[in-house]
Amino acid sequence: MVLNEIREKEPFDANFEYGRWLSSPPAGEDMVISGMSGRFPESDNIHEFRDNLFNKTDMVTVSEKRYKLDHPDVPKRSALVNDINKLDGGYFGLHYRQANNADPGVRGLMETTVEAIMDAGVNPSELKGSKTGVFIGYSCSDVENFALVGQTESQKFAVTG
Image (cartoon, rainbow, N blue to C red; front, top):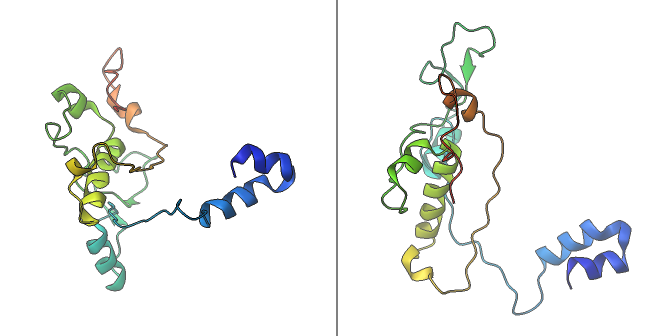
């Protein structure tokens, strides 16, 4: 049943019914989540994050690795992800300007997507031509505010795809 059919049938409950359909797909439409990955404050992967949670590690720290703390609008403590400027652009077939100017969130999404596929025990190159989907949502970037300081125009490589 597609969303439009659900809306015609139950216009006020369309979102609820569509969510129910997604969580209980018909036979032959099964979905499998078999790999995971992530970047979290002071945690380069899901295993470090788990360990930090279990050990009650404070991942909100005082750090000047990105912002000067003497500015009144910058909080003294923050939860920052490590190594946001690293990306193996060659692996992803990116031009060096794309890799160097990509939004750190996009860099992380690209890397963690590959890590999640590998965590599932699959070689990413084996997925070509298969019926496999990787679905990601991303928003909220304050990087452009910092990237444009001293420049007259954007490099237009922040979000690459």
